[in-house]
Length: 335
Ligand code: ADP
Ligand code: MG
Image (cartoon, rainbow, N blue to C red; front, top):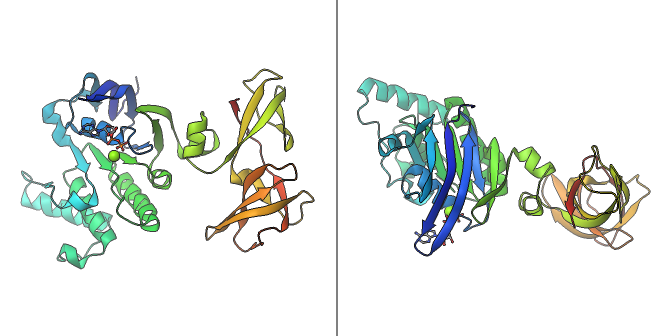
C-alpha cells in the first residue's frame, strides 16, 4: 500500500435531521495539496470538521501518516478558519524554546514575503498581508495537515486567485500536506494538485485540474469546472461520431456501440476564432475576459457554442466571423 499523509476511509456523517455523507473515502499523498470542490451545502465543511476532530463519525476511520486518528493526534492538525474569525483562534508555539520560536518566526516571515514587517500591527497591513500572517500562524507549529475552509471567501476574485497560488507556493516549500474546501473552481485550480469534485455528499471525480477540465467523467463535473455546451451526436465508427458540426474523430476507441445516441461536451477552447477560416458563424454574444473574449457563436444549423478569441479581436455582435474546430479528444456521454 502507498503511504498516505491523510486517509479518510468509508466515513459516514450525519446531523440529527439527516445523513450528510455516507461511505466517503479520500486520501492525500505526503505533501500533496488537495481540494474539496462543490456547490454550497454538499457537505464540504462537515467533512473538514470531521477530519479536524470537531465532528463525530457515525462510522469509518481517519488515518494520519498511517496512524489512526485519535484525540491526542488532533494537535497535529491546524484548521485555518475564515478570515473574520482567524484572529480569534490561538495557534501557538507554546512549549518551544525561545530560540526555536524566533527561528521559526523568521523562517515563516520570509516564506510569506513579510520579512521586516514583524513589528507591524495587523491594522497596518493590507487584507492580503493579514491573510498571509494568519496563514503563517496556522503553519507555525508545523502541522502534519493544514485544513482550509473557504479561507479567501471574503476577498475579491482577483485577489482570491492570487492568494490561492501564493499559499500553494508557501505550503509546497514547507512541505505541508493540506486540504482546501471551496465552491470556487478557479481557487481550486490555483491551489490544488488534485481536486475532489463533490455533489450531494459524494465524490464525482478526484483528479488533476487538467483532467477535470479536459476529461470530465460526468456531465456534472464537465459543467462545474468550466464553461461548455452539450450537443447531440451519434456514434458512427469505433472512433467517430456524427454531429451538427460534421463527423468528429476521437483519439482513442469510444466506449459506445456504433449507432448509439450520445452527447458530446465542447469547451470554448475547442472552437477557435480564425479570420482566415472559410467556415463562418454569427457572433451572438461576447464577454470580455481581459486576456481573451469568450464569444458565443451561432452556427448556420442553429447550434450555439462558446468560442475563445484573442483579446484584440474585438468583433461586433451580429458580425459573421470565421471559426474552426480544434478537437482531438472528444468528451462523450450517454444520451
Ligand atoms: P458545504 O460546506 O459544502 O457548504 P456543509 O457541510 O456546511 O456544506 O453542510 C452540509 C449539509 O449539512 C447542509 O445541508 C447543511 O444545511 C447541513 N448542516 C451543516 N451544519 C449543520 C448543523 N450544525 N446541524 C444540522 N445540519 C447542518
Ligand atoms: Mg462550507
